[in-house]
Length: 244
Ligand code: ATP
Image 1: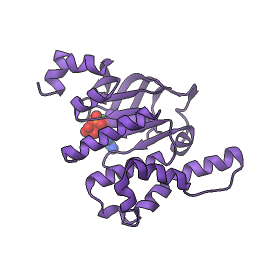
Image 2: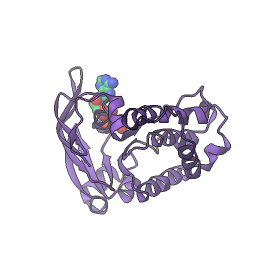
Image 3: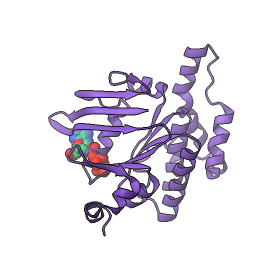
Image 4: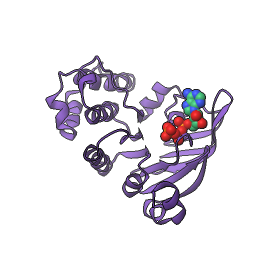
C-alpha cells in the first residue's frame, strides 16, 4: 500500500532523515521505534505531506504522492494523528469531529458530484461506538477533556476522513497505563476492521507486541526491520529499547 524509497528530509541544514526506505502492506500494523530525535515523526510528516522530502519517492496505492499537497494526500486516503494530540480546544467534541470530515466531504463532492455534507451522521456514530465517552461529552469543549479523551478525539477526528492508512504519532505519550491499554486495544480493533496503520511509539514493547512488523530508526536511517515478535526477541533491541 505504501512504499518509501530512499527518502531524505531536512529542516534547513539539519538532515533529519537520511535515506529511509520502508513498506507497509494493506492490512498491516507497522511500527517505527527508535530513540528521541531518530527521525520517526519526521518520517510520518513526510508521508502526510506536511514536510517535503529532498529526495526519494513515496508510492501510495501505486501513485507517487511526493509532490502532492497535504490536503490532497488526505484525499488519497492517508490521515495522520499528530503527536501531542492537537485537537481544537475551543471547539466541542462534535465540532472537532466535523472538522475531520471536512476534506473528505470536499473530495466526495469532486468525485461523485454529491452535495457538500459536513459530517455524515453515520460516521460520527461509528466514532461514538468506538469511543462511547466521546458521545457522552459531545457538547463539551475539546480543551476540557482528559489527556486520554483528547487522544481518542484526535484519533476519531482522523478517522472522519475515512482513511485507508492511518499514521499514528506517539498515541501513548503522557497517558496513564489503563488509558494506554484502551488506545492500543482500539488500534487493534481498527486494524481488524481493515484499517492499515503506521505507528510511531516510544513504548517499544507495547508497539512491537501490537505490530505485525517493525522498523528501528537510528539517526535518520533504518537499522533493522523484522516481524514484531522477532524484534522483541532480538538481544540488541532488548538492551537498547526494551530496558531488559
Ligand atoms: P521524538 O520521539 O523525540 O519525536 P523522533 O524520532 O520522532 O523523536 P524527529 O522529531 O523526527 O525524531 O526529529 C528528527 C531530527 O530532526 C532531530 O534531530 C530533531 O532535533 C530534528 N527536528 C525535528 N523537528 C525539527 C524542527 N521543527 N526544526 C529543526 N529540527 C527539527
